[in-house]
Image (cartoon, rainbow, N blue to C red; front, side, top):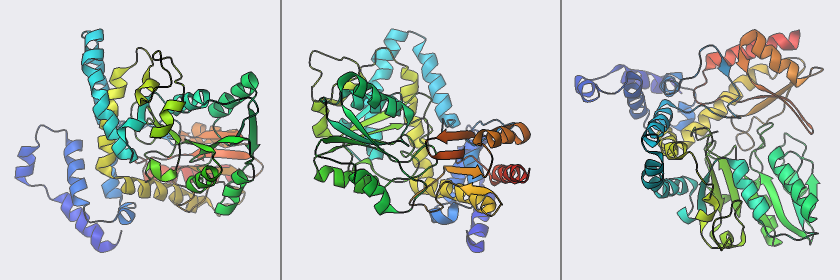
Amino acid sequence: MNATNRRRFLQKVGAFSATAFFASITQPAWSRNLQKALRDAEGISPADLASEEDFWYYIQQSFTVSPSLINLNNGGVSPAPKTVQDAMKRYYDYSNEAPSYYMWRILDQGREPLRKNLAKMAGCDAEEIAINRNSSEGLETVIFGLQLNSGDEIVAAKQDYPNMINAYKQREMREGIKMVWINLELPSEDENYMVNQYVNAFTSKTKVVHITHIINWNGQILPVKKIANEAHKRGIEVIVDGAHSFGHFDFKVPDLDADYFAASLHKWLFAPIGSGMLYVRKNKIKNIYPLFATSDNPLKDDIRKFESLGTRPFFIEQAIGKAIEFHEMIGSERKEKRLHYLKNYWFDKVKDIPKVKLNTSFHSKWGCAIGNIAIEGRKPGELDSFLLDKYRIHTVGIEWENIKGVRVTPNVYTTLNNLDVLVEGITAFAKS
């Protein structure tokens, strides 16, 4: 942010009228300050706002993160902001007044409005969205629901998520489908290389291609749409794992040209733990068997057949709505720019340290918040343990196929001071 914009922002933040005070006196201070900061940020570009710590301070106050631990493993599960936590607790208390009445006759009636709000965010028809518990459940609903025969081929990458890999292997073991595995050399900014890895694996027997939108191990963004276009030219169906992309950076699900897409909403949307979303292209719904039996016609053309989970935590599901509100309040582009800025902030400070290897791209087209770092001659687990023991920084060591390093995942509540401590820790470890 340039000096003029910064002064203007700080001047706005510093002014708080008596009228505004009395109008909002019942609000917590953090909420009043956040609303004012958002108003004052209007007209400032997302790129400029990404580095404005005075603005992001007010976003950070929306979270209840521990002051005794620097959490840089938001890629696993992200904490939810206060408004989402409060909603979930309120709905839980409400449910316990008379569970079968309040859950099924009251809270369950909120699913259709929630479906519409998720569809609006995803940019698709509400009749293409199912609400479930996580991306693994959504993706395995499709993987096990596809009508495949012995000898049919599925193309996937060794860098995909283990739950998906094991689901395909189970179908291979039980039904004789054939898995064709590609091995991606990452990080990469070579779009043709990544697309061709998939296309070269396609044969006349290929029925499905599985694409991970953003590789969880190192944050690599794949050119999903180009791979999907090539697949569809050959009559191949496309499954996209969006566990780490939805709510992380700005896109609409139909723009990916996927037939099936699933996301964990407790990652980058900041929804309660145990909430997810499944997208199925409208004309594909009738061809997929649900994971849990729903009626005498499992091949009916209704997205709701994928929601037959039995008794479920309605208080978690309904609090998703507050997470959508929080995401929209920040703004998708603002959030993306900030997350990318945070990754590049610490990347830039460690890139020239001897023995350091960065396993994620600096470029916003190929990476966003997730960064992976390796130290030559040292195991990932050693750096992970060192950061936790010496600096109280929580990361995760990765050793999966050809990706080896420590995954560092900041979030919108992460401060530059937090990242400076990370840089200090990495520097000390690399010199030890």
